Length: 152
Image (cartoon, rainbow, N blue to C red; front, side, top):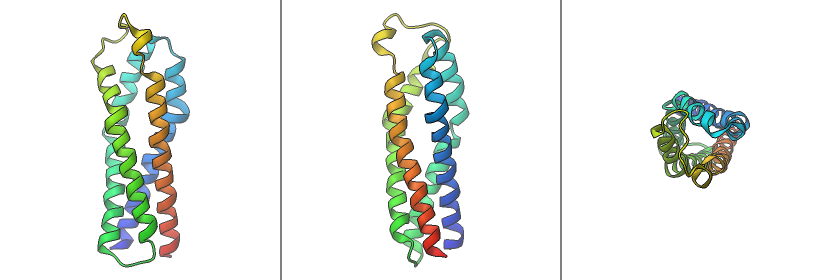
């Protein structure tokens, strides 16, 4: 069973961490550099490319880690449990902080900037929370890599 669960956790956490790194290293700086009237349609475009891919990756990895801890014997349980908790953290940050911003931006008319944009511009908040969830996901990937090394 661990021969199936650990690779699933590694693949899911690797793809999730990679997707979030792309957003952290490329997407967020791009979005911050755009004027507001261009930011809105670009954000709307990018979000539809990451959903549902990212949630599927992170949930699959988290559930695989939980299943490995509860259903298998082995020396990798500590790192797998840590990875599951870190992935849960990334998912919670996504659902509570980033997804509401994504949904709100999705309701805006492309190219039409709300009149109080200077006050409500969510880009810095979105970037900061994205860095938090990226740190959780990358650390979870490292924990899964350690679990794989211990399982050898």
